[in-house]
Image: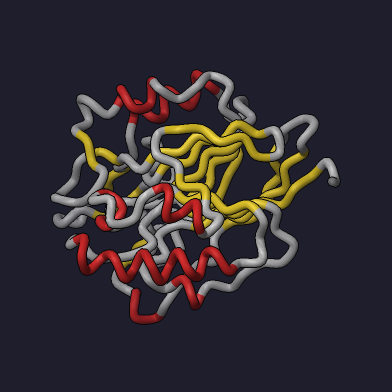
Length: 239
């Protein structure tokens, strides 16, 4: 195999996965949650089934999925690792998989906001991030670290950077090559979807959210983000 691979990261497809444009020549695809919408697990079940069947048919050999706060059928174990395994999908729940020599760790948890799935109080969620191995190359979470592609509009019209600070600190300690998340969509004039490289740390951050708040009826506003990773140096290039 070539020493370089192409990686596609997407998130927050919210039932619109069939409208996503699928890039060519991808070696690894990562979906970081919110494949569906429903808070009720029994309404969520057919959403996750439809997504999983679609995801399984993508012409990509390696597929990673981390659940999101709208994927309640997964939290309630109507969908679980063995079901994803049968479809050739690697489902990560606070654990690591090695693909192409890359250590990839994933978790669905986000700071508590409302009554949704996979949420923990901010005072307790740091225990999850403390479990990320120090040699991790790619971190996949549903939500962003604080201050990184995570700005939203509050009900009073003010802006808030609503990512998790404890996650951000752990990332800067580990210094992975790539951090993939979603959860916080584009909204109005604010653009969160996209990627950037943090100066001085050699870390690439990717918000793969495909939908824009308030505009779901128009379908996806993004098709996720593309990267090239050199398997020798493990350096990430934004495409």
